[in-house]
Image (cartoon, rainbow, N blue to C red):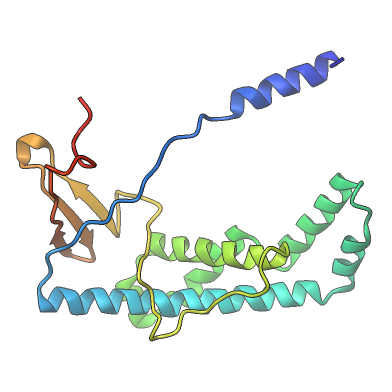
Length: 204
């Protein structure tokens, strides 16, 4: 049987759980001229270089953290002592700057020169988050190594965590024409939208 405190905690956890929201990915072709295409390639190249830079910085921090005696001591703690292990690893991450927030701070110093002309601050944070997730998988033993983006491989896609600044997609209202545009660094790139497609039809 649950005591009163456990029951209250379980009820609170159930209240905090949000229902899963269905999501999907929609690819739309863009209409671009040669100049816009060149600028897009430059944006993506800047993103590739910045991503590799923050990934390298995070990798160095991870290696330094793992090389400390404190890391081995934390690993030696019994897995049954969950709270103690979690506190030890958390303290190590903070001490060595191996947290998502720390990489957000680090990317500010890497976003300089011509890269800053192509990648805004919010977009740089998104790249830092992407790098941290890849590094954290290695830290947790879910992956053997991280993959740097080569020039040939490059970035085929990039995301932004907000839709009100920097890289974003804007859709007009039906009254205004229902046109869609990708906005990025001064360019407005029309999207080809087939409203007869069943996937794109608004639900009535």
